Length: 157
Length: 150
Image (cartoon, rainbow over all chains, first blue to last red; front, side, top):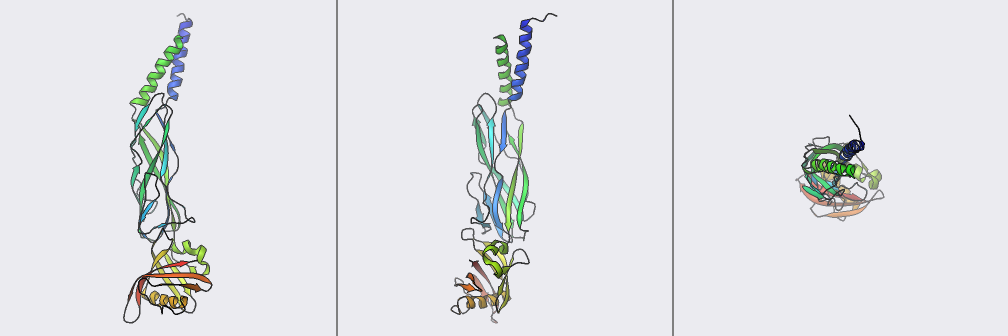
C-alpha cells in the first residue's frame, strides 16, 4: 500500500476531527450557591419557602428568624453553558426527591426551577435557580446546622 | 486545504449530533441547609444571665425573689426578632410577678391581651407583651407572650 501526501492529510484530518468532537460536549452545568433556608426556630411549626425566582425566603408560622445575626436563606443556583459551536435549546427538568434535612421534623418539598428551558448561543451560559419548601413540624430539634445533599438531574435535550 | 475541509465537516457533524438531539441527563448535586436556633440560644447574646435553657425549645427565666419561669417556644416573628412562648399555669403566676416587678407595680401583673410592660430586671432591659391569657378562679392560668431583652 502506497502512502502518499493525501493519505497522510486525510488521517490527520480524522484525528483532528475526533479531538474537536471529544471537546464539544453539549452542555455543562456548574453549581453555584447551595440552597439555604436561613435560621429557623426549634420547637416552632410552619414553613419556609425559598422561591425559584431567587427572591427572599417567605415564612409562615413565624419560624424564620430575621436579623443580621442570623444566616440568610437563598435559592440554589446553576450555570448552564452551551459547549457546542451552534445555538442550542435545552429543556431543564428537576428530578430530586429528598424528603428532609436529616430529620423528620424538617421536611423538604416543592422543589422548583426558575425556568424549564434555556436557549443559548455558542459558548454562552445562563444562571438558573432552584427553590424549595421546608416544613417544620414543631418538634424540638437539636440546634446547629442541618443539611442534606440533594441530587439533581438536568435533562438537556 | 483538503485536510481543513474534511476536519470541519466531521467536527460539525459530531458537534451537531451531540448538541442537537442529545437527551442524556446532566447530573449535579446541591446542598440544602437550615440553621436551627433554640430560643435561649437566640437570645443568649443579649440576655446574658437572665436566660438559660436546659431543654431545647424551653426558655427559663430566673426571677429575683420569685423563683423561675419556664416558657415553651411556640413561634417567632421574623420581622421584629421577638419570640413567642407559652407558659404553664404556674408560669403564668410567676409571669404576673415579673410584670409587676418590671413596671414597678403599674400593671398590677395584669395578664390581659395587649398589655405591655417594660423595664429593667437585674440590670437587664426587658419588654413583655401579653398576646393571650386565660385565668382560672384561683388566679392560675396560661398565656402567650413575647419577651424581648436588650
